Amino acid sequence: MSGGGAAGKVSVAVVSWNGRRHLETLLPALRAQRDPGVPWEVLVLDNGSSDGTAAWLADEHPWVRCVESAVNLGFCAGNRRLVEAAEGEAVAFLNNDTRPREDWLAALVDALAAAPGDVAAVSGKIVDWGGERLDFARGVMTFDGHAFQLGFRRRLEDLRPGELPEDGDELPFACGGNLLVRKASFVAAGGFDDDYFAYLEDVDLGWRLWAGGERVVYAAEAVVHHRSSATSDLLGLYNRGFLFERNAFLTAYKNYEAGLWERMMPAVLLAFNHRAQTLLETHNPGGTSLGLDPYAGHIADTARPVSAGAAAPAEPVEPPARLSDFFDRWRRYGTVELARRINDRVQRDLKKLLARQPATVAHPTLTDERTVSQLRAMSYLLGHLDSAAEKRRAVQARRQRPDAEYFERFPPYLVATYPGDEELFASPGFKSWLPGDLPLVEVELADVMQMGDAGR
Image (tube, rainbow, N blue to C red; front, side, top):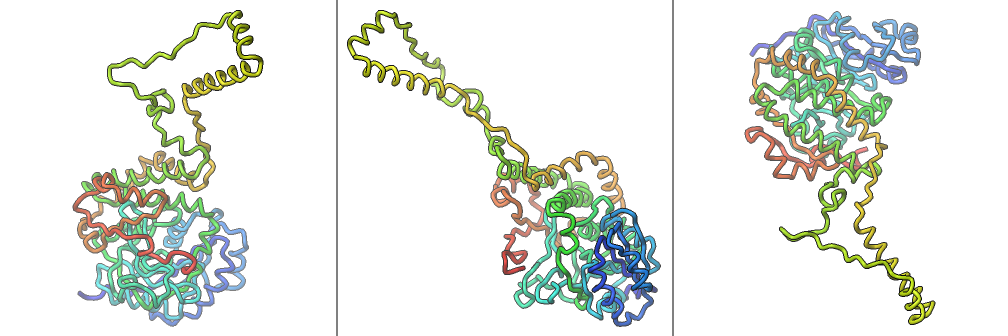
């Protein structure tokens, strides 16, 4: 097939929220780029920053086009603003907390120019700041719309087969922090979904590009160094959890084709709800009470077994003692022995009384922030059903490639990640909810990425 052709001009788009300290490293690295052979420009969105980014850019880097927003639009809507302002026929998205190598842009431009015409985007490699570990080269998507970077945080020399693609290999999606995409393709596919704010927007875009009949490929020489999570940490761990859960569900809901979504939905919902329930039970005081069966003796007094058809035995009731009986026992036993016997009787009666009472159950108290983020995601989805359905209709209306072809190339993964996942995913009951004709890759989390301190 003939090449897609070089873009007439390329726009490098950088969104920055209180990231001036990162731009101090990034912009000199961009200034030092080898000539990519096409005209190019750099646009920076000052995304509601309070660190004086706009004024600093005007003074120190007048060659950069600064687009200002009074508020933080997020990564997705922020990049949409930059695409609207971009003059290039292709747009290169780059995180502000990165340092591109000097041939980064030229490698992206060359890869897109050499690619067949149905290639909408090329994705580069991301390594850690020291260039020793992998951040992104090839991504995979899970059955419920989450995603992983294969080999994340592994040393480059320790990467496993398949974790580092060959130049020109097809990818299910490009990383939003290092890709070059044809502007026309980006806009036609709907761009990054503004409602995502940040995270998984690139997974969603990649699926839509493929469904629309285009492809994404890998550009091995387009390398950037990344301060992992340097910008995202500003959002807070649990606020990011909300974005992960909400955006993953939206990705699955919008993109699974008709017929397949209806068969996938039970498993997607079951996983989502199981995670919320597990967090509620295990991470909040009194949470275990949510797992109680009120008809198993806790509330309805059903704990004592009774033979079928037989009435429960009545408790023996002694007639009230007469005063003469009391004095008679006092004379027979003496004061000390009578007191002991009365005490024993009181203890026996108290035990019987307590045995008849329902178990005291502490109501759960919601204190865990991770649980709150999960419930917030659920609340958002319930409150935005109509807008999500409209986006699904738009995505499916432009479909040209069936999901069967997409998943033949990139089978979804089943990876236990959250508390309770391992038990759920191993359950025959859960697996019975997954379509039997859906190819699934079942692996452990350690097979996907570096675990523990060794990966830091």
